[in-house]
Image 1 (cartoon, rainbow, N blue to C red):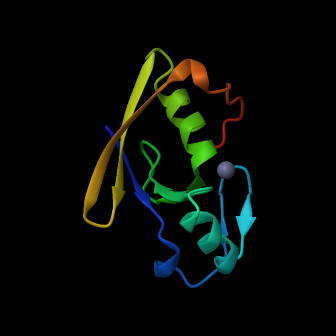
Image 2 (cartoon, rainbow, N blue to C red):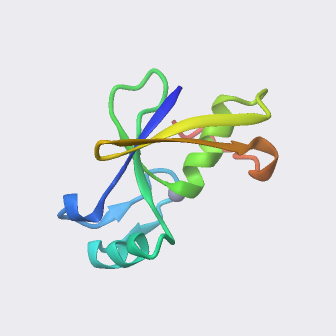
Length: 102
Ligand SMILES: [Zn+2]
């Protein structure tokens, strides 16, 4: 089971950038987007890697689909502070992700 950590803007001091697509926001802009539930960045540890990466929610779903190509319904957990949420999505809803990034 993949668990990702929500990056709360109040825990950060620097601009934030998705390590996959390069989408970047200042901390101030991310705070606004986060509070309006428009965009969430996560810490995500790819399988077999030691370091966590910053990833935007769009790229996260694409990555998960890549890791579980044969599953129709992909489940994962989102950790937000002390809270853990079970999430799932249909693989068919997500576009293919061709790059071998991680
Ligand atoms: Zn991204």
